[in-house]
Figure (spheres, helix red, strand yellow):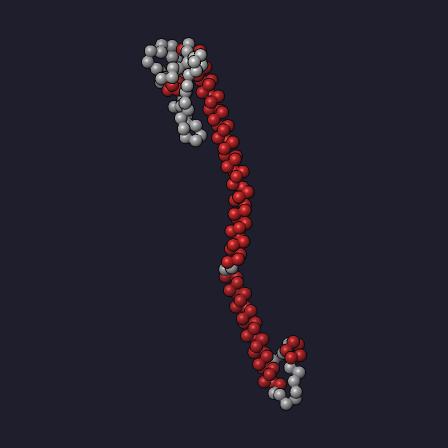
Length: 151
């Protein structure tokens, strides 16, 4: 068998030593070292170390910390836009109700007067909304409150 140069340099010994036996020992050691190295590499390819997992978790946490606030800020902005659109629609529908009936719905009649004819109202030409009055984006009903001047 061929012994690599590194082991040949180590084998500079006095002449009375059995060189062939030492060469075989070093060759066998080289084979064992290669086998151990391949076992280590195979084990490394089978899974991740704890340190690698911790680094990935930290990176995911940083990304979530940067992206999540922007996402929720966008969601809140869109909810505010939905509220504005719904309130604009309700104000136009209430104005149409006032033009046809002559007054805004009373506080007792509330926004339900837009979908169901209130008792005692003769010129009602509704329903003024195709569906029930929607809830706001947070799931709460709109509160109809008539001011002192009837608006």
